[in-house]
Amino acid sequence: MSFFTRKKLVQAFMIILLIAGLLYFLFDTHAGNRILHGNMQQLSDYLRSLGIYGKLLGMALVILQTFFPFIPLFW
Image 1 (cartoon, helix red, strand yellow):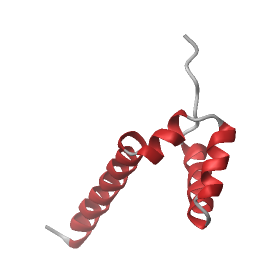
Image 2 (tube, one colour):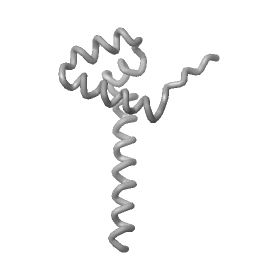
Image 3 (cartoon, one colour):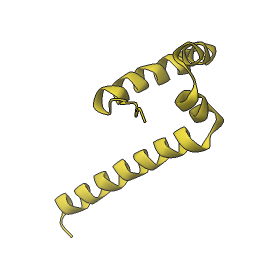
């Protein structure tokens, strides 16, 4: 296995791990549940209560929403 093939394999594995970790956080933790199912005022209050980590999480959510926009389903 060449160096470039191994490097691409490691990068793909890291991306898969990152996505799996994000999905676990959003769907299997209390904090993720509050992020997914709260309204904006509740989310804002919750992120403020986390201090600096809340600010970092808020920035990450903005970046995430830039690449994966939330489109509500109106049934």
